[in-house]
Length: 453
Image (cartoon, rainbow, N blue to C red; front, side, top):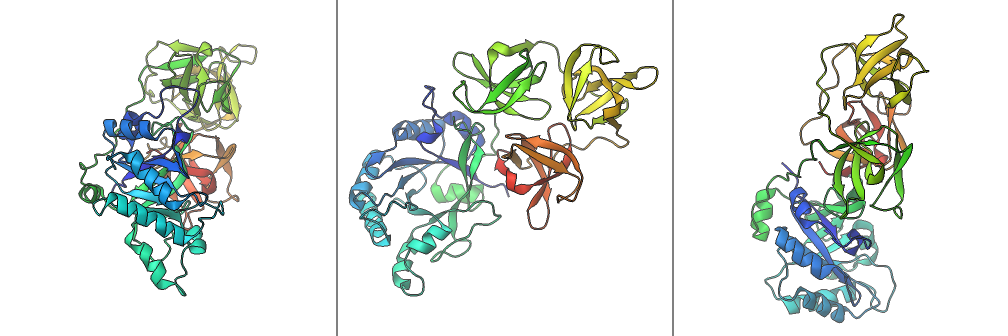
């Protein structure tokens, strides 16, 4: 069963340095719904009205949430929330976000109840109201199930949106039962750009049911399988600078997530309004981010031909220069990285240098055979269709032959690289992944966060 998935967003997903805001058209192609922050305390979210309207225009089923703040009167918070909706209360529930720790005069579950009751009085019985919280926060701050069971049971009437990360099933607090959650926020580290946001990361949530259940419960059209727009074909560039930073956003004010080197080949995925920055992905390892277009030269040649059936090799050096002839005295055309797969085209007289072609992008030249291991079997198969993708959160993460540090390293992945999940060990602490260049191995799961599939 395909999981019904959607992000929750606020003004944090809108960069203050760009005019366009969240791309809800793009989000609708990648997600099934969105839950939008309306405000906190007595402050409307600065992007709420715009987000609310544009998500509707894009065709996304919408829910709203209000971050309850103990420093402000509960009734006034409820009244402001309902007034912001202005009669358009969305297709999904209105969620009271209960997670604050300000210790204001309206702290505690009795004031939560006041807040919820006021919302109910204003919207009537035809609008579903829910609760967002986390397991341990609820355990600490809600009525006690042993000494206040009746008070706790009051909250049972509200469907639960639970936050719990890094697990296959969420922890659910009483009075709800283990499978009695409506939505589950399973990560705060989704791929923001994949879902149309301007933030690097985004919260992602599952609905507890299939597409038909979702459509029936919220009276919306049946969700279709997300079909994100394909990456542009023939949109490849060569790096002309000696080194070029890849950044989290389109400008030098954004932090760097890595760098490109001269002659690296990248594929453009998006651009800013004036085309001065491109969001690119390096073909060799999937490094993705924004780079200045000043140092990117468009490649007009056709994609590389498929392998011709010659011997194939795997690169064992971290970096291996590709040269115009068989020797270090020849200029470099670029370089290979550890785990790259190449096809042998010819060799020099003593076999110390091979003329090779990289399978991913056709980069061709001479490389020292010392750092090339012949592949005796067929290359790794492509990852399964629809497999879960993961983003690397460590600066550099080793890929090993088996699920543990006792196994030999066969390569590595770098910060923000996107890999495909294949399997996991019994306790889910290690995941078997496949890189974009075909390298398959095991990585420590702590540094892999789910992203778009």
